[in-house]
Amino acid sequence: MGVSSAHFSEDELRCSGSVCDDCLRGQQPKNECQQALVDLLEQFRSQCAMYAGADVQTIVHSAYRCPEKNKATTNAAKNSVHQQGLAADVHVKVLGPHGISLLSPAEMEKIAMRCERVTGFGRDDHAKYVHLDARTTNTHAALAKWCYEPKGSSCEYYPPKEEA
Ligand SMILES: [Zn+2]
Ligand SMILES: [Zn+2]
Image (tube, rainbow, N blue to C red; front, side, top):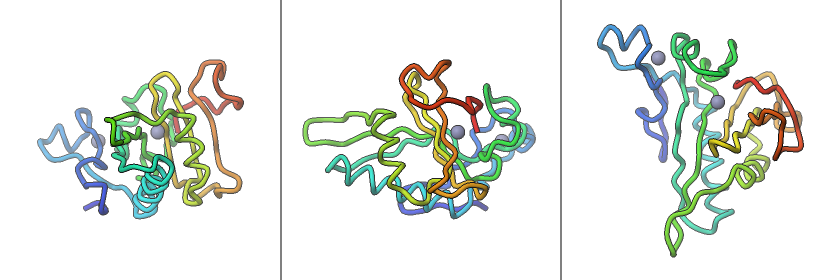
């Protein structure tokens, strides 16, 4: 049984499956996301809406990952906090009066830095998503921060390059 919240369903937070032991047994992949992650996602979402001055939709690509899934994920760190249910990879759609647009990784970074629940942050400027986490080994003031650019071409900071 996993957590959910006003804007994030259990289904979008569960492991995306396909390689899970559970899936292979014909069961639904797990959602072992923790409350701290859902609180972080809600905070991020509301800050995005405030920034955009419009309603937003936060699309979760990956939240909880079971150990099998993590092993099968390209670039995933061995000790990825996705496995603790404390991380999510997201992008944000702005539902503006003139149509739908996307927030850029740079904008999402600016917004994430306003969210005191964020203790780990990564951005991928090619795939245009960001990784947000609520790891307990860092604080927001001393957060873990990295980008997935090979040489940080559009980021002013460097590794850890490994997905966390
Ligand atoms: Zn799984
Ligand atoms: Zn991630």
